Image (tube, rainbow over all chains, first blue to last red; front, side, top):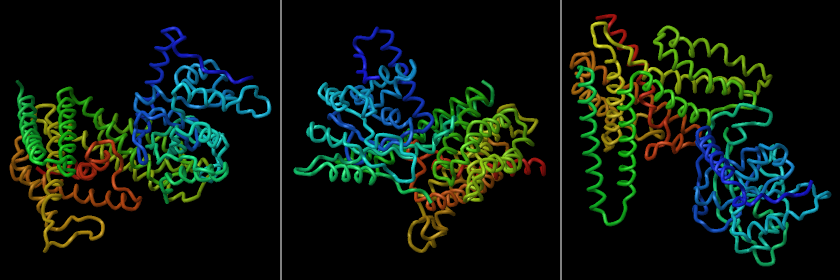
Length: 225
Length: 314
């Protein structure tokens, strides 16, 4: 399987675009009704600058959660970067991934892929989209707050320095639906947006990724007793 | 127009006039200040929230008992969500908590709706109390077991059991009364308790009064007393919507306000324990549903049972 670019929404028939819009609103309503999700714009405001929101990843609900708290005018310009193997598994997921979320689908299998994931990401940025990415690269099931970051965030920072990199912490979602559970619990979640992180002059990859991870982890609310 | 409708309309008119006066007062404060002032803005947000609550509650009263039940069931859901977000729990409690939200809560409000008084009085304190921990036991994790099951039960007691006594008030009426008058008792309880809280909040802060719980709340014995007095005064004024006489209404209002102020301090201690200022941001200017309803939640069961005792004795 190779990476598949998301279909251009404008080229889809009108009824599919309508269905995608309705499904998108339903997801937003559902997320708000169940988790009362609350956006905490701590380090930046909800302004229309081009941004990459990079977030912690504990659950499959993470991306819809960030997507739901963004104000509509930002949501329309924001595309999640997501794994093609997950989002193309069934027709329903393909509809949700490509048409509702308009995800930039990338192939995670480093050895077998034919397309460069960075190229797809930069192309989306050059089209003016903001992005949501999960630099840990996979869901974090362990006790540590964050897994080590993959290099993607550094590559974006060095290739497109004008784009703001906004650390985005999703709090409490893991309790809503822990791995292996089917029924989501209605517990309150919040999405906390921190101060943007930029690549400093002469900073190398490892230092930058450590600093970006620390900026994200600093947003984490104190663990409960 | 039936006497009940007339009383609902009169009460709504009176509350609307008070809210209008507060809105105009706030707008005047706003106009006098050249810069936006935080205190004024907070006050106005609160008044707006009161308007919203007043309109929702009045519409529910006009729509009938099912709407009242639905309104408080939704409030209960939001309050339980706030409580469980910060309560001790682990993965092993997932099913217990899901049962609490999706089965126990609706069941309790259905019991109230069908006026099964025996059943709704024992369902959560006895049935759920004995059976729900078993659901958590089945998952096999005993880590912090007692804290987890106790806090789960506490959430249900506060946010569902006690809260469900507010709509249950609508079935309290003497046989010689017009059906549906019990709804006005809900309005009575909410109005006197909230007025008592506001009076306690804005008065008695001067020197010379000892704080009731230093370090937890700025509430003094003086402010608590003025809260009781304000509640009793309003109870006296509103006696015509209750089945009590003027003095009886004042006494019931004072007792309700007392239970409410106690509840406010208890829930404040829980918030402090969890390091919270407010339970959530869902009601603008007020915090969460639990912040808004804490005193009414504690006052409702006391008020409910005292009213029944009153009639049995009288």
